[in-house]
Image 1 (spheres, rainbow, N blue to C red):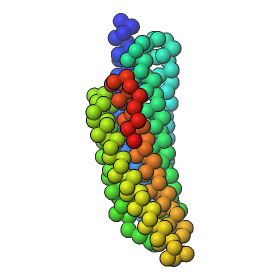
Image 2: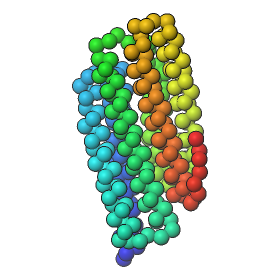
Image 3: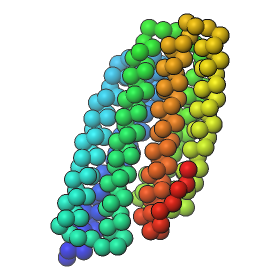
Image 4: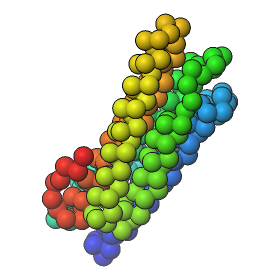
Length: 217
C-alpha cells in the first residue's frame, strides 16, 4: 500500500512538472510575441504567468521534501524525486527569463527597431520545440530523446553568436543604436540561457532513466 501511494505521489509530481513546462511555453510565447508585435499588454501579462510557474515550483519542492521525509524512498524512486525537484527549479528559471525578455520589450516600447528579429525568432522556435519534446521525454523518462533535445542547444548558441555580432556591428556604426543594441543582446542572451536550462533538465532525465550523471552540453 505504501509503495502504491508513493507511485501515485511520484506520478503527481510528474504531472505538476509537465504543467510547469506548458506554462513556460506560454510565458515564452507571450514574451517573444509581445516584442515582435510591440504588444505592451501582452508583455505585462508574462509576469502573471511566471507567478503561476513559481507557485508550481513551490508545490513540487514541498511535495518532494515531504515524500523523502515520510516515505523514505529508495534507489530509483529517490533518484526521481530528487531530480524532479531540481528540474522544477530549472523551469522556474526559464519563467524568469521569459519575464526578462518582456521587460526588454517594455524598455523598447516607443522605439523603432534597429534590426529585424529573424534570428531571435529562430532562437525562440528552437527553444519552444525543445520544450515541447521535453514533455515527452519527462513523461516517458526517455534518455535517448533527452540527448537529442539537448543537442538542439547548439543551434541556439550559434544563433546567439550571430545576433551578438550583428548588434556589435550596428552599435559600432551608430552610437544612437547602442541602448537598443544592448537590449536586443539581452533578449538573445536570455534565450541562450533558456536553452542551457533545458539542457540541464535533459541531463536530469538521463540520470533518472540510467542512474548516471552526464554532461550533454
